[in-house]
Structure formats: structure tokens, C-alpha cells
Image 1 (cartoon, rainbow, N blue to C red):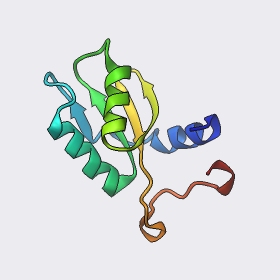
Image 2: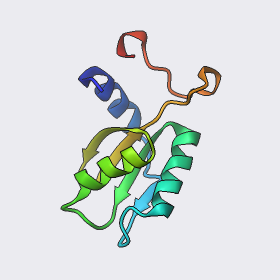
Image 3: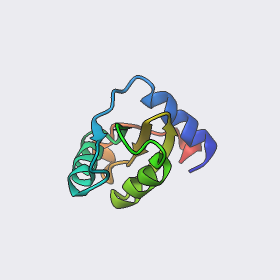
Image 4: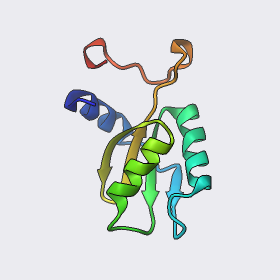
Length: 100
């Protein structure tokens, strides 16, 4: 992901609230499933880490790989993930042509 696309998505995610929480059990099947479903519904989500504060980058990258999404950024205890819907008619976030 290039920096222009990353900046565009970070701006879009600024007002979002976290929809998935990673607790004491870490990134397990339930978290992956919840993240995948949230990505299908919203395309751009925030994931909050309530624990594992020194492993957030690795866990966020692992979660992105498990859900076949892109890790936009990790800011504080929040990770931003993006997965655009395959069907253009169902896409919620329309990237400008110069960012694709």
C-alpha cells in the first residue's frame, strides 16, 4: 500500500469507533471471524487492543493476513484494517483512481 492510499484511508477511519476488541486471549478464531465479518460489512474497521500492548504491531499484521486485508496503520492501541469488497456495486469506500 502506498503512502497516498494509506493517508486517504487513515483520514476516512479517523471518525470510526473500534468494532473489534482484542482482549486477554489475543488474536484467536473468534477475533479473526469477527474482524472478517466486520470487514465484509464496512470495508474499513478499527481494532482495539486491550491487552498485549507490546505486541500490537505483530498481532495487527497477523490479523490482517488472517482476514486477507491490508493493515493501514497502528496508532496507539488501535489498528486500522481495510478490505475492499470484490463486487464494485457493493463497495462502500471508493478510492480515487490515482490511489488504486
